[in-house]
Image 1: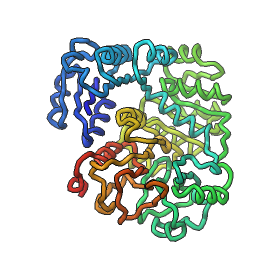
Image 2: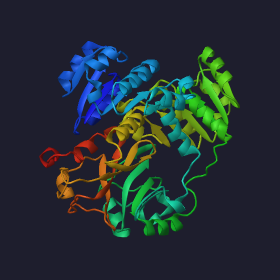
Image 3: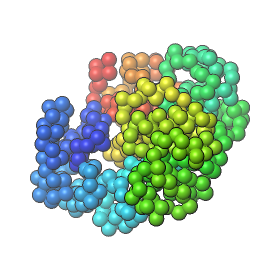
Image 4: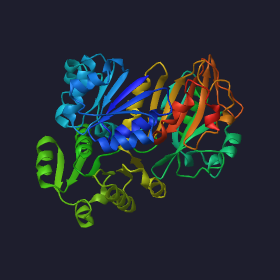
Length: 455
């Protein structure tokens, strides 16, 4: 499969890295020749220097021979034009990254009239995950995911005291028909393994048969948390803050949005209805106290500075705010975040890359996909005869810590796998992987013998 990526920024590089282990021919286009030279030495890809929105460049790379093109330059207009031109020149599927609210107001019109298959907005994607967490809290009697005979349930470990303090081996002895596929701890999703100990306030994601999931739901009964998000404070009036404030206010929440740039505040006040826009420094604790931030039901930090987002989120948590969510873009803070008591930490780069990768893979391989708190992805993949994972015991894969094979649908049979389980052609395999490492899925389901590479 041939994939063209226009724009060698953080997102373009992240998608490139994720595709490297799959059956893809990747072409990366950018105006920065020095950056492309460095990337071509680091990765096995084709690089082309030039303006992404010119027909001349698209013809130069023979865009009609590509299966998928994603334009992710810093300019919305360039991305829209490049994707539209590529479609007109014969590329069967195109996508563009678009962030400006003005464009998003006319998204359907752009797609239909400019013949673009998909517009991707990182701020909308992260807003949807925050909204889903704050407002659309799951009802456990229904689970949050079902596929044939499999169900997935989310609940706090303290709701089932028998498993608290147990490692995953002990858990399987108590609940042999289920598997813990992910744990949310201190705002960070981890993929658990044998010796990980379940803690009282861990948010567990358990997979098992539908019947067992429904029985468990009756034990851990009710909702996970109160879905009351009547009062929400957002720090940072950028695009994420704007989209989130608009959506929460439409739901009926009382929203206070703090932004330090006065001109931006005027824009926000004009565009947002029923939102209190405050001009001030969100890092000023006295301002937060004056605005009664400790009485908020939820507190979201969405400035352009990771350090500020983390520190303010921690401050809000220490003041007793129930739901504290932070936007953090750099992976270097991952270890620090795991030690903090935040409810949710989201990386817009990971969420966006995950959305694009699902579009590239297509429905022939990925049957369904569900994000877990925006940090891990549950995928159901269809296995074909020529994949390297066929007839190999799972223990021989030596899977890294960020991925787990959760279940296998084989005809009418549902299998919770062990190390001896072998995947067969025709299986539908359910896996859970951190979105920051989702590229490993390409290696696992590569159309070649990869056992030697996994060892």
